[in-house]
Image 1 (cartoon, helix red, strand yellow):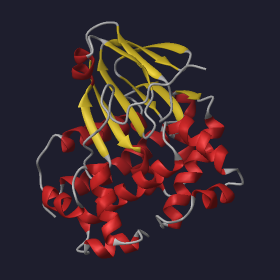
Image 2 (image 1 turned 60 degrees about the vertical axis):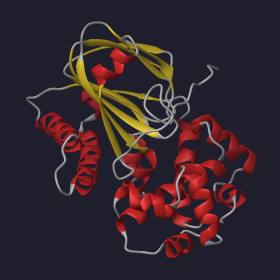
Image 3 (image 1 turned 30 degrees about the vertical axis):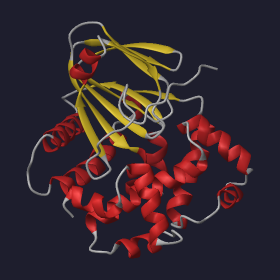
Length: 292
C-alpha cells in the first residue's frame, strides 16, 4: 500500500483560511506555477476539492490511474483520495476547496448526495446542456463572490456552496466518468462517524460510545480514522467541536461560557485552554479577530 502524504490545507500547506469555515478558492495556474507544474501525489483527509480547468491540458494521477484532461472540464476529488497533477501545456482554472465538515453540516443525512461526493468525478462541459451550463455558472458565482468584498459575502458563499453541490449531483452519471475509491467501506464508516459526532453534539461523549453505535471496536474505528484522515478519532472530535465553536462565535450573540456548555465541554476554562492550544488564540481573541 502506498504511504499517503496528508495535507490539511491545499497542496504543500498544513492550514487553510476558509470563509465561514466552508470554502476557499485559489487559482489553479498559480498553484501549479508555485510547484513548477507538478503537484505530487498527496491526500486531503478533510477536504473536498472541485477543479475547474478552463483552458489547457493536464494529467491527473488518481490512485493508480492516469487520466488526460483538457479544458473546459471539471474534476472532483473527495477526501482520502491519492491524487497528483502534471501540466501538459499552459492552463487556466480554479480550485474550489470545501471543508468536509461543513459539507456534512449542510447535507445532514442526504445519503444520495453524500455518496456522490465520495466518488471521483471527471467531465467535460457540454454548454448545450442546461445542467452543465448551470454548474459552470454556479462555479463562477462562487469564484466571483469569494474574490469580492461585498456585504453579506459569508452568507452568500454558504448559500452558493449548497447550490454548487446540488448542481454537481444533478449531472447525469452517464455524462461523467465516476471512479469509486477502493477505500469506500472505510469512507462509509468514517462518514457515519462524523454524522454521529454532529448528532450527539457532546464533546464529552466517549470514543467507545461512537464505536459501539457503529458496531465496531474502538481500535477498528481508530484504524479507519487514521487511514481516511491521518488523525485519531479524538483529534477528529476536537476538530469538529472547535469548528462548531468558531461558527457559533461568529454568528450568535451568545457568551463564551454558554457556547462551551452547549457543546458539552466540562467548563469554560477547559474550552478556552483547548481553543487556544489548538488555534493559537482564545475564543475572546478569535471574536475580536473576526469582528464579532
